[in-house]
Image (tube, one colour):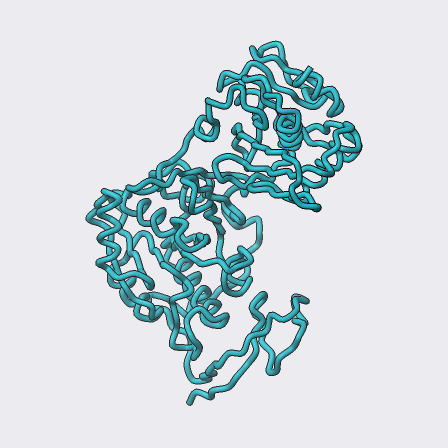
Length: 456
């Protein structure tokens, strides 16, 4: 007989408490306890079809364990394979998160429909089979090995998975799935935690990889308890602005690969297109003679690409000047403006400053600092920067240009795209034979030296 009771669950770590608390005693977060109605059934155990509960597990010596290369599934998508570390590992649990409408379901369905000879079970808790068929027709892909199941009951999903015996299981989305063992609404902390644990057990014991699609909350993190991110093997974040056509797939956590990888896609009418060389798409070729534009050699993950930083400096209409940044940290921009005024002597206290990273990208690489202040100064002086010159360097508070990592990759990317010169920090070329490069390498120590090379 199930006993119904009310408990309070921390939405951050999943800690249970019989009463509400302002501060979670486990993770220390404030105001994270939410009320849920749960049912404890002492007579029943969690049952997952196809599982064996009577297998006795004994401890094994570390030296007796054989370490073999993980078997990976080629997803026929170079960007997705790169982010996953070379392909999808069998028996792994992958979580893909992103904002609503960003293209998570399109990415997964497009990838699944492109796989031949791989039996796939696509479980949709948000869309009907007719909606999925219309999307598949728009993507212009068709495969006879993709099964569609519109179901939200976890027990029924496992029954159908046992009947179909898929090679890949897709669940869209984890917030819509519920189990009968927990008497709370789908998407609650308890439901997400229990369903994720059961799916993990299914993936590990059956060897079937599972792709989970998850929503994010208004803070930008995966909706549900933080334990969801701890359970899964890989967490992928699908980012981008809905008003722009570029999407970025980042690896936040990966037990089978590096978290430094990055995948870039272009959203089109017939689906997502892989962007193998993002530098050519992120640069506009018609900025010659325009002030306030500087090209930065940035690195996201392990991929170097050149991006266009745009700045606009104008006289402040109101008493307080405006500071606005799109795709760049506003606090860091304010710090760079203070360095520009203190160390270089340019007065911007009565100026409005607007900063934008072209293409709708969000860049966190500190090596674009030099390009940011150069674009600001170019707009303030209304002097354009010479075409064919890019730059990379972190700006310190004392006005020095600090060395950046992976400088060789940045130089080679600029040379490949036909740039004639690149400004880099002084003594940043240790162990690199610069005489083999056709591009002119200009080394600077302070921002004043960089400005002299750019503006004379």
